[in-house]
Length: 203
Ligand SMILES: N[C@@H](CCC(=O)N[C@@H](CS)C(=O)NCC(=O)O)C(=O)O
Image (cartoon, rainbow, N blue to C red; front, side, top):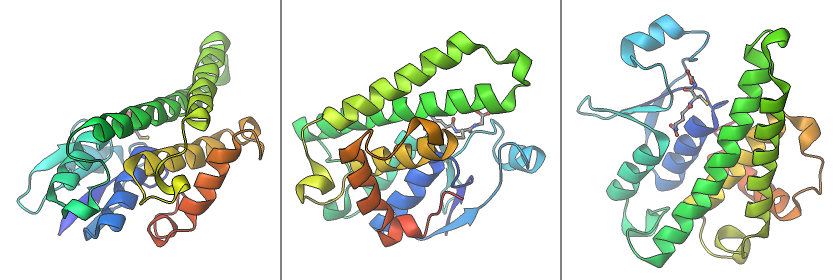
């Protein structure tokens, strides 16, 4: 069975796990932390970055977008989360790219304000990243309605956006009062109620 390494408090790991559940791929979850289990992690995963997907033949894949691309290639055509080609593929990829920037900026602010001693946190950098995070969420909020919200089947853009918001709200609750991003809130509540999300709790 494939092994997925990393905790679901990582939005990158969580989006892979949710996608695998939606696509019907069985996996063993190896719940190692990049911080608390560094030595054990390094033995399997020398760069200590998650997610890592270990295939049945022992091949090890890193970088969530490449892992998801591999899974899409293995899935039945109607289980793909990003189309194989064409304008719709580019649209969903770019939508994911914005959600990944929102995620990355939320992670950077979290690292800067939680992993460093307070005296080493650099306020202008935190402010810049916080602004970029909100710029990305505002851009997602303003995109034309598509995917799950439009009644169409769920896409990787829906998953990555919902996972991004859930993570960012968890680590920066004051930044995400209800109603700041109403459409994203709706997408989030629909997604988080799906079994694939419920079975992949962030905490
Ligand atoms: N672009 C990577 C980002 C992965 C990533 O940064 N994961 C974090 C956990 S949220 C991690 O491994 N952090 C440990 C570190 O950066 O040393 C992906 O999409 O897989």
